[in-house]
Length: 426
Ligand SMILES: *Cc1c(COP(=O)(O)O)cnc(C)c1O
Image 1 (cartoon, rainbow, N blue to C red):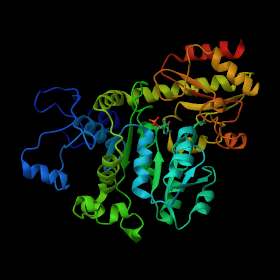
Image 2 (image 1 turned 90 degrees about the horizontal axis):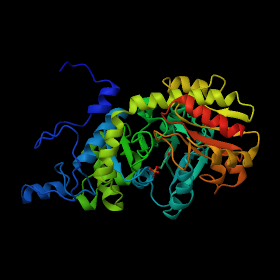
Image 3 (image 1 turned 90 degrees about the vertical axis):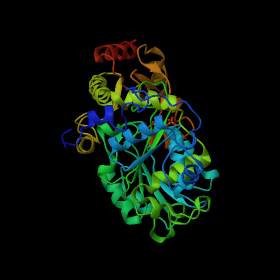
Image 4 (image 1 turned 60 degrees about the vertical axis):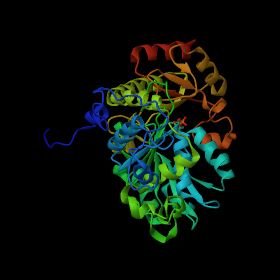
């Protein structure tokens, strides 16, 4: 092998994988087993004491999942990763390592509807308090910082309108506040944006979306950038203080620049339990092999569809950062030069009723609550994903009553445009 560093497409196919040492199988096998035999009693004891790396039980780790973890860590430029059962599970596991009851975290207001719910209601019952900030106003993050702030959470390309977040500016606020920046990179995928290159300390994904890419398997992942010093000021006791369940070791001291990923595994996943099925890991790994090809096609189709909609008389406006006159176009050119993603919104002159009517007339676009499938998808957020918000909050989060969200798939763009044309015109 030459000493050239492999490029992104090569990593998407190969990172973390090698022919199976026992059978020679070239595709990564599905290690569909709950548990793994120890070599001897000493080996067992060292695994349980975190003195050696190895497999114990699939809730804590599995060889198929390990290939997925290594691959996504490589694609994102992190030191290590942990795969879990869903994107939401990734968010719980991350924040459990960072927040004690009564602590706060700052979150961008423009987020996946499910995350808004999870942060507002479920996390409140854990005593974790979310403070909202406006991703278009960096100073609003600065103003939200208090002595109890433990993290900042943003999306790189934000739901539902596909707006682009100024990751570097918000990472400067996080650094000044001495807290990690968590970036949900689901809508961009590392093919479009690598948040760690822009100052993120932790990246989370719903693997369910573009990484898996085929709308067939749930999964989530946490990537540790290895950039944050957890030992300062006793702010992060899960990482800096002795762990009674592991003979008093301190995770930061023992594991250095991948201590956060270890904490998520041995404290979060082990105790909360949202393990990813090895079968799902296999499906998602297979999806990732074609990520660069799919993502480019998703973006090219989305741009063509956005241009068509922008010229249609029934359409009031289109929010797609790939359009030259869009509010986020400069940020898109900086952060996502290969394409502005494939999830965006547009608003209809006919308001709420026109939105409901459009989703019922579309035939090639599936009306459902998902994004990042090979198939094109459509939803009317105000009556579904964002229906729990009041009207003002709907508008603030980009999901007003006249707004329709698309996730543009990898079909022929002419067919997608024809479907929209018949549904808008009829
Ligand atoms: C879907 C999604 C999630 C939640 O992921 P699940 O796998 O459905 O739990 C989180 N963030 C974003 C941006 C998403 O699109």
